[in-house]
Structures are given as C-alpha cells and as structure tokens.
Image (cartoon, rainbow, N blue to C red; front, top):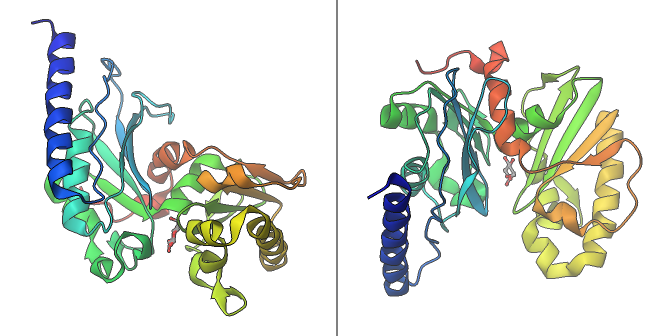
Length: 282
Ligand code: BGC
C-alpha cells in the first residue's frame, strides 16, 4: 500500500477507536486529531515546540530560524491534566511528527529550573514541584527546556526594543516582561490582586468572560491595561490568547494583538538565550 494511503488508513482506524472509547468514557479527553504531516527534509537542528495551554496542547517542529517545518498538531487539554496524562498526550501528539533534536516547552504555570511550581488550570496541586524537564528528557532522551507559556509566546512576539510587555488572554491570564529583548524574571500577574478582591485571572480569565459577558469584560480589560502601564511603563504591549478576538475598543498604537502561533515559534528563542538554556538536560 502506498505510504500516504497507509497513513490515512491508520489515522481513520485510530480516530474510530478513540471515538468508541470516548463514548464509553464520557470524559473531557478529546481524541487527538490526526492530520497528514508532509515529509520534512530539513538537515539542520530541529526543535520540537510544545505549547501547553489551558484549552489545547499544541506541537510543531521548528527550523533554526523558528519557521514551522510541520503543521501544528493539537488536542484539547484533558480536564484535569495531571503530569501522567500530559505525558501520554505528548506521546500521542509527537507520534504524528517527524524526528526532532531538542524540545522547548511553554507551560501554563510558574517554572523554576525545569520544575513546575504551579499549574492552576491543569489541576493545581498535582503540579507542585514536578520536574517536567526531567520527565520529558527521560521519555524522549532529548535536551529539554521548560519555561512559562507567556514567556515563550513573548519571546516569539517581541521586537527586542525597549520595555515590552506581553499579556495572554485565554483560559488563564499570562504575563511576561522584556527589556531590549531580555526576558525579566517571570512575572506571574494572573494571580495577583486586581480589583473587587479578585485577581486578574478571576476578573479577566475565560471563566470571567463567560460569567460577566463581553461588555463588562472589555471595561475590565481597559482598566487592567491602565494598571499594567502604570506598573511597567511598557513601550509596547502585546496581547495574545484566544480572547483577544473579543476586544471591542480601539487600541492605542503601542498595543498590538499577536498571533497564538508565537506560543510555538517562541520555542526557538529559548535556545538563543544563554540564561534560559543554562542547566538544560543534555
Ligand atoms: C498561570 C500562568 C500562565 C497563564 C496563561 C495562569 O493561570 O498561572 O503561569 O502563564 O495562566 O496560561
């Protein structure tokens, strides 16, 4: 059977099997969508970028300039998503991709030396002090860097000039700060107090958006932007994440909406920053 046909047949079979399992389980684990991946001839270093989001887990391969060598493969984030489940999903997703040499991970929580300290939207406490870098290294045998997801998206999105701030508006609220292209120590604004006794995430995260509706959410966002400007005096603010599509007010010239693809593409920059690449598992 020609290779293409065989891939299609295998994909169909797996999808059917997963669908059957899903109806039995009635859980929130969505089947991994299988897509055809074109052959990759690239001879340079291939980086696997793994973007762990509150609603989707996404992977793609990057060349040394950060261009995507394959389409992005995605699966809905299981709820909850403890380490074991995440590793299983990682294996499923990467099984669809060609070989790679190293791994960059953007994780939705606080990271210290490759260990996750928090993971509020993935199941909380199960992520306290989990050595994700060591686990992925053990699983794949590849060098691994793990950083916060907003930091990774920011590394892809910024221009490297002045003070640049990145806020992601998705399931959670992510934040990152840069000066002349250098990443500051991770800024975890999402869980800092904002107003009415609530945090930024409680006021602006996806749950809040669903609870209070688009109008109030926009009002809150305007207030939050003023706060962030007072706090950091950013020259440029980049807004990422799925909920940017709900922004209904005119943004000033120094605020840009950036693509979520940077959550993947930022994966190349972690290897160019000696601070981040330090202590990488080899
Ligand atoms: C996490 C952050 C993360 C953000 C976006 C928050 O709940 O605490 O670390 O960057 O969600 O995923």
